[in-house]
Image 1: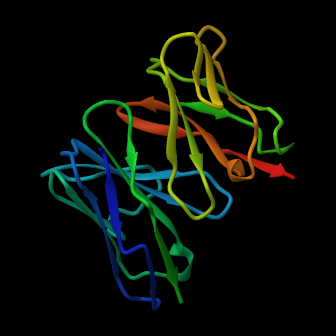
Image 2: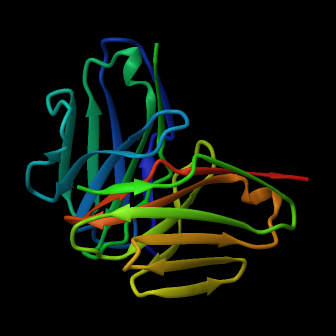
Length: 114
Length: 108
């Protein structure tokens, strides 16, 4: 149980375009979903926290107009990277919890912006 | 805020034991997690300690001392597949704060 999926697994896009990443909790209803970014050889950095039906809470330094988060249901959250630039190339990971402290992680999405 | 410190890298031989230390400073302690992360993959859960003491789970054990703000992850009978990054994390405000991770390299 407690499986989280992400789609796509990897994506290559051109600079200036937008990319949408989906995060789904497959066998449970997620109270909260989290979006992380991880650069090579660095730890996970939390970007934002989202709850179903409400606006996401962004961490300091994360541009909310650039990284759009929609949490339309208890099993789906999406992250849209708008006007992507090469420096946005990273590993994006989502996670979800059922109300406790433990988070269940998705497999991650590798974004490359050319 | 949370301040989590763990060593950057460790190297050990196949079959050996390695201990990864993690020290933390946090307001309102709600337990401590250890995750394993292979390169290019998402973290996978290893352990969650809330009470002091050692918890053993097969080849992996995790220890916590709340009074010292200290935890360690013990990996026994190391295998090549254990080469990965090990992340210490503490919950706060329903979020997780991660340490920088310790990269463990297992050599034959």
